[in-house]
Amino acid sequence: MWSNILNHNRGSLKSVLTPRDKLLREGLVDLSSILRRYFRYGHHEAIITTIDMLGNANVAPMGVFLSNDYVVLRPYVSTRTYRNLTEVPEAVVNVTNDSVLFYKALYEKNSLRLRRARVVRVPIIDGPIDLYIECNVEKYFINNERATIYLKPLCVYEGPGSKIAFSRANSLLIEVLVYLTKISARVLDVNEVKDRIECFLSIIERLGSEELILIAKSIRSKLTLKDLRN
Ligand SMILES: Cc1cc2nc3c(=O)[nH]c(=O)nc-3n(C[C@H](O)[C@H](O)[C@H](O)COP(=O)(O)O)c2cc1C
View (cartoon, rainbow, N blue to C red):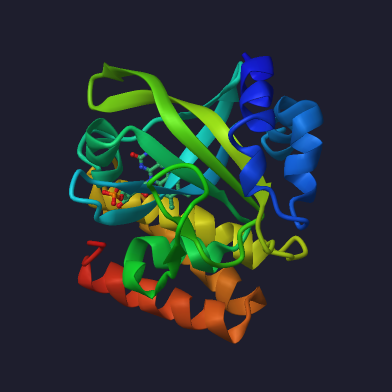
């Protein structure tokens, strides 16, 4: 299958290559190994862009992993991401290490700039993205309230990059966001995890930048108000 994608790249995608496309050029040799390198620790997190049938864009953080040659997502069927993928079976997997981008994808969606992708109708995030993976939906299954969606990568290229050294505050913010979304989806009860979230927030406030400290404070007030809608 990769050879199909590689041939596809050599053919119709060739016209969209620019000199900056170091990774895509490598990808012409072995796209599969680029994805295996980026997703080498098993389950990863990314920001998925999708559109509905009217062309309205949506961004949302989602877990992703590789299975054979596919990028796999497991959205709850209640999410807009799932609904959009059933309406327009295309997505962009925006890979980044920047936790603030994940926060904005949840709570400040309108602050994210989007721009045209190369081969799919879905836009990409114009920001500190390490890798863009433009995909279409190859197949999907539903199991209870969750879908398993197999995305076929069509075009893979480097973004400006998140360019960040390992940061505990950065990682813990992602952890807190996962808890918050589970609480708002009623997968978790706030009382079960409130202490853990408080502990993570206090580490973020101790080790994080001013920007992260402000975000931690805003999360703390959401928790107090139990207003975790996004
Ligand atoms: C790091 C991270 C990973 C997430 N992974 C998933 C996931 O795999 N599946 C899912 O349904 N929701 C996941 N969520 C929660 C969704 O992002 C959240 O429910 C969001 O509101 C869905 O947005 P949407 O309705 O616009 O698609 C994750 C959240 C975070 C912060």
